[in-house]
Amino acid sequence: MSKGNEQVWDKKIQQYHGGQEWKFLKNFVEDFSVTTNGLGAPVSAMEAAKNAVIECTHYPPANQEPAKSSLAKFLWPETWEEDNDRLLLGNGASELIDLIMRLAPKGTWKAGPFAAQYKEYERSATNNGYTIIDSGENDTKANVSCLVNPCNPTGDYMEVDEVLEWILNNVTSGGFAIIDESMQPWHSKDFRNHSLCFHKEKIQRLFSEMSISVYVIHSWTKLWSCTGLRLGSIVCPNTSAAMELKKIQVPWSVNLPALAFLDAATRDVDYLNRTWEVTPKWRKNTVELLNKHFPKWSCHGKEFLSWVWVDTGSTEVATRAVDIAKSAGVPVRSGVHGYKMPTFIRLAVRSEEKFKILLDAWVASGM
Image (cartoon, rainbow, N blue to C red; front, side, top):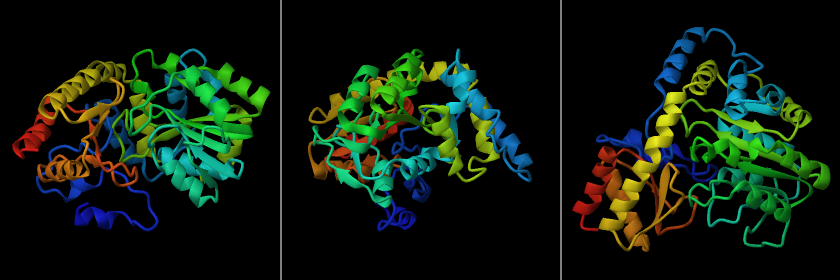
């Protein structure tokens, strides 16, 4: 890490993330270290957020409206009115992760079955006194189990029935299953049918038959490329569960510009259609060129995702790749920090023109 980035993170108490080095690079071009939408933020949503700053002398609405209803319509176009009460917005997914871990039954915590996953859940579990169970212990159920699906960074993905089977095998009766679907809307225009959010009857069956409460979390800062605003949501198994969570949430945690941004972004259909069109194309281009120039590297992840998880096969090569990218003003994410997979790097999916800058830097280095 650069000296500047080390100053940003308190390594003793904070979980490392990407997205910080850009501000310390005088030649910065593009941030490949974060998994945000390569299109950038929707113009309509940016304008709405800017306009909302004018109202900053007032408190945000305590009921998070109309943004919350707009997101409900986005998630459940046909049933949003009956499902809106199960939905709660947060200051990024991070706030909601901490809220749900404070509410969840105490005891043991377990991650999904993949080689690595987003680490904020484990950080929160540790800070709340949970005993961490190794995810490789397939026969051991936990009071709280968390699955990131699609999995960031590995790119692994389960369909709905696979997720439900995983929940049954990994969560105790009376426990919580936390499913992070932050990257799931990238799936396609048909993403809802592949989302656990859209299968309320199956979630309710788990609760009625097994007393397992299923919560689905989204970070909306990736799909709509607004990480600086902080926007997340949680779908609760029922209205009473949502009320219990709301009871311990600090008021006004989502500010006016963020609410205005979300309200506009959910209605920008053209932006989403463009996302579903270009992301797989850009990702395919990235993977094909990496395979061509670096045949010893292996690329991982589903074709619709906004990043590529790359195994360079060597800790030394991965370190060089990170350093060269940073020197070229196009930082990528190291697999070392947080994930503890030192031969891997993660790079965001970006346009052909921007990826060429990164690729050219690596090729010119003779890696």
